[in-house]
Amino acid sequence: FDDADADIILRSIDNLDFRVYRVILSKASPVFNDMFIFPHPPCPSPFVKNPDDYKDGLPLVRLPESSATLDAFI
Image (cartoon, rainbow, N blue to C red; front, side, top):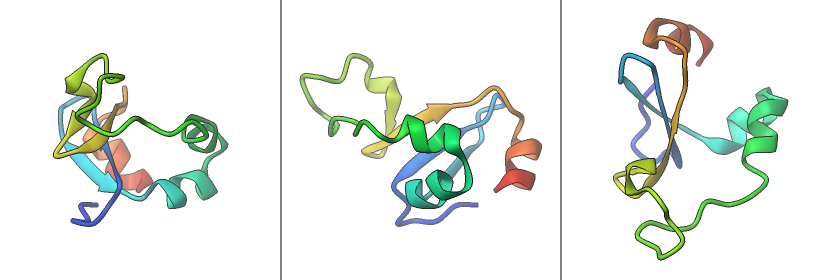
């Protein structure tokens, strides 16, 4: 899944990026819902400790799953 106007990027363990929507992940998963309760600071920002946590201005979430697993999930 790779939607140009998505608002977050999920990265698989094999470094494939999936651009997705927080609201959909939040509705489908209590884990993602809890993760998104606190907003990410905008990038660039003095509050961003690691600029590698963003790509193309979007928050980047690294996951331990393979791209094949994420593709099936999403």
